[in-house]
Amino acid sequence: MQTSELPDLAHTDTKPLHWLATATVMAAVVAAAGMLQPDPRASASPPHRTTGQHGTAPDPEQATFPLECGGLENTVAKQAPGDLDGDGRPETVAVVHCAAGSGTPPSGVYVLTQGSGATPRVVATLVDPAQKLSVGDFAVRDGIISATLLGYSSAAVPRCCPDQQEEVTWQWQSGAFVRTNQAAPSSA
Image (cartoon, rainbow, N blue to C red):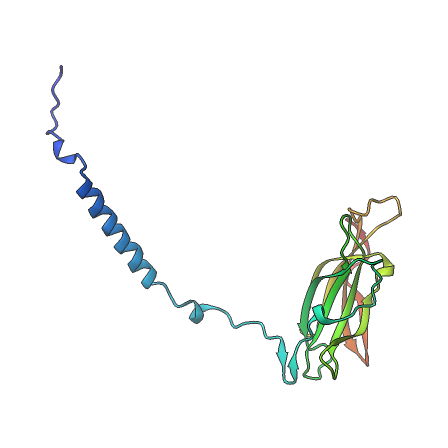
């Protein structure tokens, strides 16, 4: 047997007391790190406000939409609040479709306002489900509604897989929502 030129390392054998001391020190480090974290309220961005001078944005879950679903419920797929007409009262834009079990059901895009009662009411239909379009990206920013409309080039295209898309915006001008196409229709 060959002897080592290194000193005997018998003192490196771990004992339960060593593990307990290590665990205690690690727990203290983790606790100290937790206390030294910045206050999340101080660094968070301010919340997106859905209230204007004159109330809260209409809740689309409380609205009745002009959407025929053949006995099925409708689904509010997307929604965004904003003061669209500059009157200081927020409206809500909702993307709604029938609760179909499969495929891509056509969507309607509706503008809601809070009526004199508690129930929001539809004041504009921007996309009618009869157009057989669905909505991809969707946003309301600075009074402008933007959406990616998805459609089909023919009846032979499976309803799961739209093959055309169009970028559009709507903006309130002279008492109506005016639609602008951002680009010519293209195939997806």
